[in-house]
Amino acid sequence: MNFLSKIKTLLAKARERRFGVGTYGLSLAYLSLLFVYLELLLHFFTFGSVGVRIVYAIFFSLAFAGVLSLISALLPQKGRKVVVVIVVLLLCILYETQLIYRGVFGSFMPIAQIALGKNAVENFTNQILYCIRRNILPFLLLLLPVVLTLLFAIKSKLLNFQLKLRGKLVAAAISVGTIAIALAALLLTNSGPGSAYRILTDSGTATDNCVKNVGLLATTLQEAHYQLFGDDGPILNGVVSGEIVQRDEEEFNVDPSIDFTQLPKGDADL
Image 1 (cartoon, helix red, strand yellow):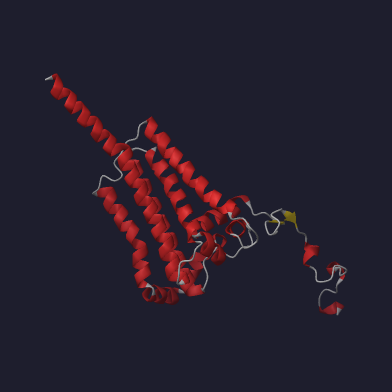
Image 2 (cartoon, helix red, strand yellow):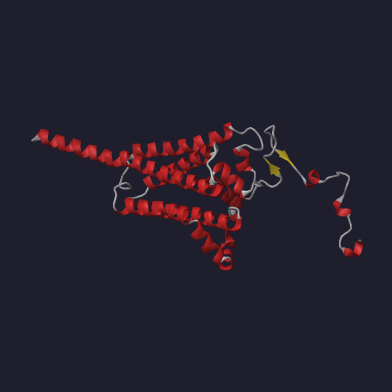
């Protein structure tokens, strides 16, 4: 009798491990593939190809998946499902919006212009509908993660796990590790103004160029940072030597001897 009880206990512990760290690993893998899928799809259908620098977008996708997995692991089961579904839904809306915006206006929408989205919808409704019809395949493919995540949240046990302290520490280590890898990849290739690091950190970089080099996720987070905390102002990371220099208005004069404040103003002074 004792022997059977021990076997039942061992099986129960095995099930607990299987639906603990093991299921968390499957959840992390799913979210990682999902975010990488979104980046690859957007690059392919907007730029026509996927270049070598897509590796930065992949690293940031893995980092974002690691952070989301950690947050979800700290939540109760119902809260975890709700948060993951909402985050995936919002991300898919972001990618869909940028896909259509670029199709209509020829460039990605900076975060600073997001308030103009309502005007764009009202004034360019026909163009937006035409762009959706013309890009119906990528439009539907970008919606696929929402459908899959809803199915997994409702039908699957993919998000049904409960981590103990050791499992949560593992999740935290994975999250920190993926962020460190993404940042290290940027810093190690910081070789000049054209490097991915300079493109991402220079507040003057066009959104299209930033998305092409480091991905939409990293670009959106960086632009959101500028909106919340301000940009670097006159401090620009644009020096080949790697040192930060300060530039003022006089640097952009064609002739340093010209004092623009003394030039005639208005037709009356001409």
